[in-house]
Length: 244
Image (cartoon, rainbow, N blue to C red):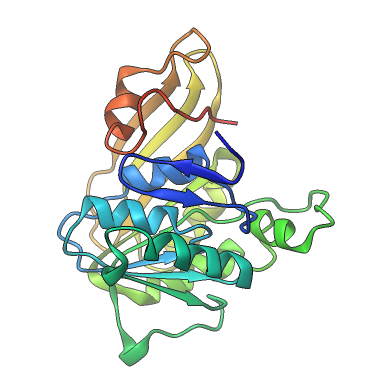
């Protein structure tokens, strides 16, 4: 894979101007989030536009608002989306989610976010990269309550987080009247610990669906049938990404 672009089955992602490159976290969230029957979707921190494009491919009725705080990434996301088949259904907006308000008090059926999640760690001196990776500009304490306020009564919030931040996130959603609908634990291989967790919340108190996904089998570069099935509509040939 060139560091400047990544070819998916039905769209091309150029990423030389975005600090957040195509990675497994975004692909997993884009394939796993339940966008069925969703009309209005909000993608927070769209980066290259990857998740917005994946949702648009999966749901031909979805109208997607893709927010991005970084000017260079916003410009590239717009270019990626304009070059796709779904440019008429994705609106890329340069904005800080902490202060952004949707037009006409719009509510969303689905909100997705692959948030920056590093805290208290050494920052990259490159401001663009630091913003993409550290949660100073988008802390969970701001992301979750505000997202909850933008959901329709039947709406869902879907995130991917490192396992170390699950308890923090769960405490915040409890405070904002959300219940855990689905959880998927992600392992890089069968012997690896869980590194990432996919989470989906909504306002209905229901039994939580809990599952696990192993990306690779015990052999490096050989991907599990479950991972191939989940991502098969997006990856081109054998071009899969490992979980870092």
